[in-house]
Image 1 (tube, rainbow over the protein chains, first blue to last red):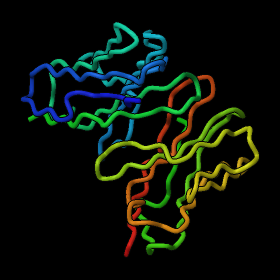
Image 2 (cartoon, rainbow over the protein chains, first blue to last red):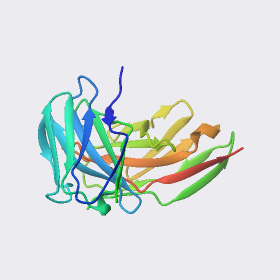
Image 3 (spheres, each protein chain N blue to C red):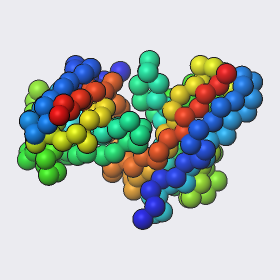
Image 4 (cartoon, one colour):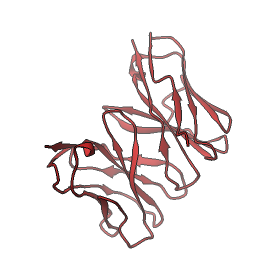
Length: 113
Length: 114
């Protein structure tokens, strides 16, 4: 079975540009998570969805970040406008539901110049 | 904020030896789940082992086992017969009861010496 798929794997952009990260969860999984990993703050949950509905977005840093899940097999995380401090590895994960194991994608390494 | 603490930023072990990574957590709940994830240089987050708080028996997965001390809020990972491929960052995480949020520790970097 395919795992969680993320694209792109690497993104380099200039400050002020819009960045869109994409995620395809494992088929049949009901929950989808977006995490950010930095050296300073470690792994942080940004937002998660259950059955395509955003449940908790308290980790989204500010209005420049937005996330959508239009259907069960696709989600996006958008940063507009991007800033150098957004440089990080962004992970998408999915699970079968509450307190089930979360399976992570390979991550997207974002560098904002 | 309810936290997960990994007090060892770095650990090293000789190949074939045993190493234990420490993790403590803060919670006021009785129902929760604990996880150890491994992150090799490829950055992929890989589940190592999970423990349900209501289970008294410690979880094991091949060479990996945990020592779950619920009263002490301690959840250590033991790696037996360490292999070079075990070298990675190891993260302890807790799932909050009533939520799907995972709270992660800062990680322990494990080096395996040949």
